[in-house]
Length: 173
Ligand SMILES: [Zn+2]
Image (tube, rainbow, N blue to C red):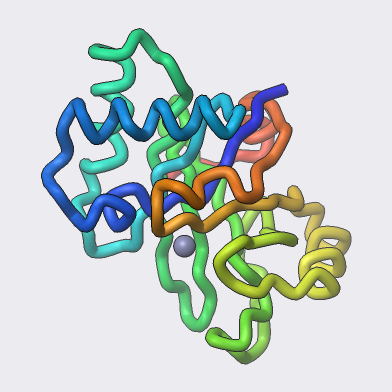
């Protein structure tokens, strides 16, 4: 089992500063201090799409894979916010973020996602909606920080295996 926070806004948490080894080192320190094995770097669509992959490369090449980085992106799909996790072999695991958040009202269409947040430390997540959708659509229930500041990383996290994510993953579009 890995302790993973799958929804972290890393670029935004660093005020869009150019990525450096020092920033990644600080990230590693925070993640380890919180007792996590890794995070998904999931900034909003429209920012540098290479950023999460660059974070991972620096962790691998300069810090001996000290933590696991899953490159990701949070996208707006209609009124929904969906986070895409980019896994190996061009596979993707997609989950619905903070369902039923009053900021994003309206119906919660379940559109080819594999997971749904039941807890989000930043936004309200309607647990009833999450549980019902998870049961009806066989979705993985997730708890994430949605951190926009480094110190908020790990406020919620999941205890899962990469195998569980990969088993549900779909081809990346
Ligand atoms: Zn978010």
